[in-house]
Image (cartoon, rainbow, N blue to C red):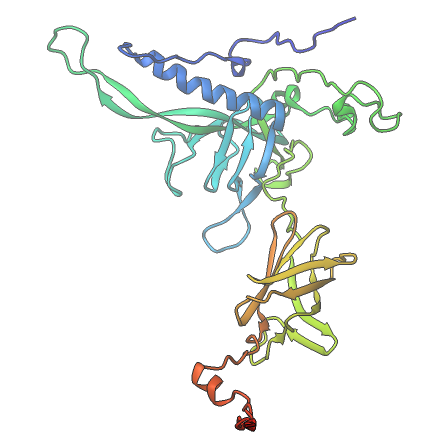
Length: 406
């Protein structure tokens, strides 16, 4: 039996994050304002959908609610007033709600609005907003926040036809903003979190909690579309005089599992020293005033590299003209290298370079030296004549004459 739980029965406004159409541009096309807005909404809706389904909604960081101290220096707290610290939240529809500055709120107000890019210390509402609601019967109030767009920067617009009237105005910008609302217990009741339905982590992925891991259907159902835009920040208990006796930032608050503050550091690879066993010699990497280890020509040199973070199947390099081969097992702290200097290797100091399979690299500078090649004397032609062995040649004696007979 196949079921489809990825349905959305609420209004189009709530489910607007499902839009998936964008304009296609081509040469000689007449581009209108509607086309440009459609392109903006496409990417914004894709980000909303990503946030809602992959990250969820709630408070990401900050947004703690705290009391407001009296500013006259007499001590104590201002009645009916609280402040919201800067922070960030993800709305139920996937909107990013950013409060960049500390916001002070009077609990007798219905709501206040603000912009995410307003300089700190500015007043968001330019109208007379000191209209207080009667909160005398309310002992617990809730602060909630939602995303809102704030139109700004009005400009004159040319009229469509002829006329002598003043030029109309249109807002040329939309700022990301927010609305903070004070809710009574009755108003907050539909938004309250049902903690009895909080699932186990395995249940989030369709794995039965009573079964061993990786047993059961791992395909979760699509998250239903939320039916409200509010993120509750805190519950505030006030007395008859408006004094806050309790501010609960945890009970009604929903937190997002954000990875912004999660990190770890990789294991570094480092060479501490280069050693030989015959003859016994040690070169400490990074220490000044040392003599490098001399590599013998025309014979095998056993080098022990000591450090940390070495990985299996690493490679080691001693420079041109030197063959380096790792022998034996490689541990995280040491390994042995058999090095052989070629006949034509240039004399001078060499670095030891170790490269792990993950490309992490460690260098020990000037740890080795190659001695000059032995000099073979070749005699000049003059030297060859002078130094040639003397050959003694016997003198020829005259042969005796034969007697003549008559």
